Amino acid sequence: MTHEKLSSTELATLGGAFAAGYESRAAQRHFTPEISFSAESDLSLALGWPFLLQLERALSPSDAVAETLSRLSSTVPPRVWPIDLATRAVRLLAVGYVKFPGEPKPDAAAAASRAEPFAVAEAKELLATMFARPLPGWRHAPWMLNALEALGGGGPVVDAVLDALESGNDNWRGVKPMPSSLVSRIAYVVRRLPEAEAQPRRERAKKLLQAALEKVPRLLDDDKLRLVPARRLVMVIDEPELIHQGGARMDGVLSLYDAAFLGREAFLDALRKKGKPTEGAEASAQYVVAGGPDVLDIELERWSAYGTNMDKAAAHAYVLEQYGMFRLPGAVALIADMAAKSAVKGDALAWLETHATFAQPVLEQLAKSSSPAKASADKALKELAKRKPS
Image 1 (cartoon, helix red, strand yellow):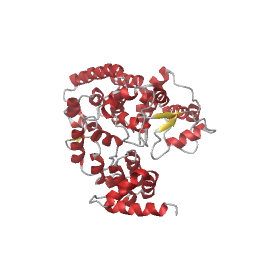
Image 2 (cartoon, rainbow, N blue to C red):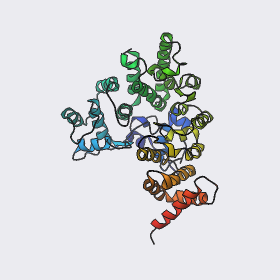
Image 3 (cartoon, one colour):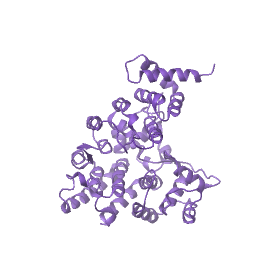
Image 4 (cartoon, rainbow, N blue to C red):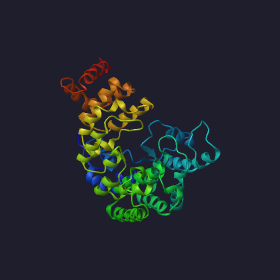
């Protein structure tokens, strides 16, 4: 199977995250041909998927508000959005509508009824205010950031977050998890920009960090301050030494989100030190992008602990979504194990069936091997054989 690189015309239809395409720092460092099942996914993974949003042509459903609500209510959020529904969703969330009952509040419905493009001032206002609201579910503030990047380009999104940080507003000072998550997320956005646009923004982030250090000299060294928004600028600046010094740590180990910005060996070292996933931990396709196929071998021993003390089915569905992106033998082994042991057995088996042309030979090799997934692979082969037409 050979994937042709996407043309400039094709890239333009996918939204702002894809604007610099194969020339961005992210793609230059991480693009791996045929690591997935499509050319779009190959590039999307290199650019930071799942921490981006991809657009497709307008859907124009008969009940656009209901369709938008349905997508926003998904256990695993859609990664690809029709351009009109993404615009409606951002406006809907901007009015503070976050609980998704059967009937939306009037002001939310009115906001979601507007599908026209954002004006620059409107987008900036949304970015400057959205972090102040309660945000349950799947992190709507970072989702909105990526939606605005998709709809209007990454540069204005980065500038708006840096503007808010520079403003000195109380919402951006002290230990603030949601604003910190926005600063963390724009690190991926900056990596996706054309380098001529990215470098000035890194320099601005460096100046903002220096100003914060003058006020709080221990900012990068005190782990109690790891969720201070200004400290998260180390990710935007994207220099390994700074990330090692000021990245978020728990029990002395760098977070996997932050370690993914370092080299392969540094990431694998952090992953091995983490041990089994604890409550709140999530799988991520970016672990494989950063650490290579060895990550899937390590995750084969860890995946079952995702969702500890939480909704196992939702957590396992997320694991399947993340690692199901990869056209790699390690993904087949892990998903075969999930088909035998997870809370989403049927979905995992369906993945193996959908990708049988690639998965079948891998399963046959696993069934003859000493892999921890040997028995699961053998079971998967038998289940798949039952599904073949006689």
